[in-house]
Amino acid sequence: MRSERVNPNASEAAGAELVWLLGQPHLGDYLDFVRTKAIGGADIPPQRLADEWRAANDHYYALEQEEAGEAERLECRPLPTEMRPLARKVRAHPWFREAFGTLPSGIVMVELDRLIMSQTHIERPFADALCGGLGADPDPEALFRFCLPLDRPAPPVRVQRLSSDRYLFACGSTDFRAHAARLMAPGELGRLASFGPVSSALVLPVGFGCNLMSAVRSGGRAVLQNGYHRAYALRALGITHAPCIVTEVTRKDELRVAAGEPVSEDPEFYFAAKRPPLLRDYFDPKIVKVLPIVRMETVIEVELKVRTSNAADC
Image 1 (spheres, helix red, strand yellow):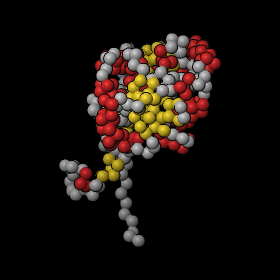
Image 2 (cartoon, helix red, strand yellow):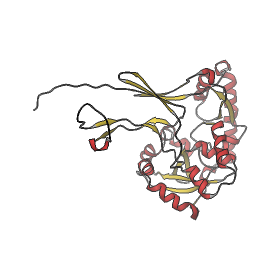
Image 3 (cartoon, one colour):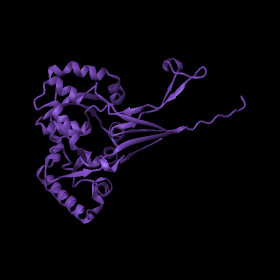
């Protein structure tokens, strides 16, 4: 099985825009992204891109002096009374138990401006659409369901059989992924049709993450894990605090379980830097750059290999 992001149709590229955070790790990632995914990016002189990145990096250095320790000032509040029955439903849901059942996790109102960012970009049209769907003054229930939805429409998925043993699954969502393979007993297979009795089945689910707004907290700092577009949309609407699942970590081994690869591979940057990138930086014109990009889709290709052999019964 392999998964990748590809451009399905270059002629449909126009209209996608990314808000990119400049000046933070890593310059090479920014140069590669612009060259391969931005419309006309291959024609932009790398020196110009490096100069933009360097100017933003200098601005971050100034912020380090002016706002050292800002991430530790993150405010977390208890949920309002109206949200607590909804929170109990989320905690009882299988998605929550599967994704957040290993380490201590709770649901609180987090301050958006001081959440640390590990993702360098936001797709602006998608975030703008989210803003329109929520409105500027949501009631507590609407705000909670926006951040922690248990019932939401899934993006369309294209399925194609490439050959007798190869299948392709494609979706425009960056959250599209293969889940862990699962061995199922006959009683779990429902009305599976076959030419004879079935003893078991190996199932590889393909779909999406729970995509509940969540963060990983160590000490006074919290790094946003999921829900970047929703957090951006809320901040754009002027909302300051939002319900979020917060997982507590106290050591690096726990971080490898709870956090994504960028954070677990470089925890010092996110949890020890004087002034790491924060959500409010997405609204700082000295740091952000809007990039028109080619439309991408996530493609998962699955190849089946079955070997049958006879061995002596020892």
